[in-house]
Image 1 (cartoon, one colour):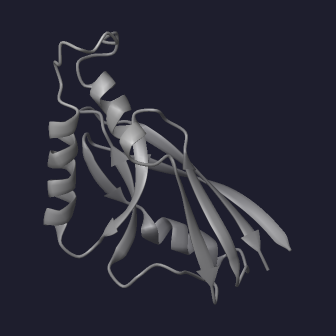
Image 2 (cartoon, rainbow, N blue to C red; image 1 turned 180 degrees about the horizontal axis):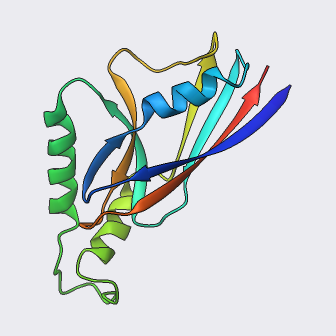
Length: 139
């Protein structure tokens, strides 16, 4: 059994989903691990990770719009506002989605479905440099 890790930097340009599937696949191909489990973990509290459709961009836009309605900016119920009106809704959106993903590795490749991609889900309006740690264990 072998294990390795990597850190991915995703430069967001504001709210939305940022596909980094190819970055993960490129790193995976260089590890030599043919079968195992990949865990991805985002190191932020106002961004998250999702596996989502990678064919129709309307899916990503609709998902972002839906979560914006669930956690709107300028809600009078929020107490935390030190970092701007988009920060507390970003924390809520991150809590409703995921901070980590587990993806099987089979035959040296990500075992994703035909229309699936790995996305950083940026919940803040401004751009950020987001870090995602990958840990791979297998043989």
